[in-house]
Image (cartoon, protein in one colour):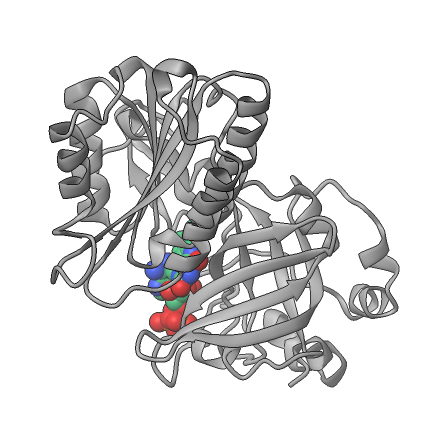
Length: 357
Ligand SMILES: Cc1cc2nc3c(=O)[nH]c(=O)nc-3n(C[C@H](O)[C@H](O)[C@H](O)COP(=O)(O)OP(=O)(O)OC[C@H]3O[C@@H](n4cnc5c(N)ncnc54)[C@H](O)[C@@H]3O)c2cc1C
Ligand code: FES
């Protein structure tokens, strides 16, 4: 499949033909969009490689046609796919927790699908995305047909991402539930790098990665590898001696591995075993289903722990224009004068204190 050729054949004219009478493009799913579609000239420029060579500041959203480096099935039972795309401009600038929007080649499905960046490598220019494919008629099901060498239109980099500026000296909880663990992988990798750096500088930084599953576990080995790396460097020592570590714990609802229950049960076990730190030294970064995030928000507020959560909402434009993705906030937005915020541009990562779940 060559999604990039859609423009040549006129297929991506759907962006223009698919407009409603008011001029707002409408997806088959009934959501309005306003994302900029690539013109045929831009597409040609892209395909000739001119565009991919430029290192642009992708804090400004950019549409690129990316080459598929590889795609593999991560879990057939869970319909999870592991997609690697060559997008050097994005790999060079992406922050953990940011996302990209992927376009299908189906002109009746003109809305892009937001997928978080799981891993980014600025040396190879590859970004890795792990997504759950929906039923036969969904846009994500179309992505499963992508093979090495195919091309796909990608809008990015989107959203704010997690901010790691203040983590040195802290105890970091990286907490994911279900497919919410994927955006946390790049975050955990970067924390792990910082842990080693802090260790070398005799400063303290520790991290508990907590992964929550229903029953089947996936991607656990990747997180385990991060923890093992730290152990290899003999950095696992008592925090009182300025220790540094990344350790990974698992919760399963059916008790098939780790702690039986959910991520909060792992937190409770850590508390019971005295393996916690003063609230002011802790920070939580989390992504997962809303009930999990709601429970973590309450947990953090009760204990006065700083907590950042990545939210998910149905999205259309992905760039702040359509208001499909708003979420309730405590503060009134000074422009709109209402209690809400756009997850795609103001988030997806929010200070848990600021949002109402
Ligand atoms: C910031 C963000 C990051 C995400 N990261 C990942 C990820 O890393 N891996 C992953 O598997 N999924 C992720 N999702 C969810 C993913 O975007 C949806 O599962 C996907 O868009 C559904 O599309 P579909 O073609 O399968 O379904 P359809 O039913 O065909 O989708 C119809 C329309 O609704 C939108 N939509 C439906 N469900 C969602 C949803 N949950 N979130 C946003 N838009 C939705 C679709 O984008 C599309 O425009 C993320 C969502 C958000 C908002
Ligand atoms: S998806 Fe359009 S404003 Fe967020």
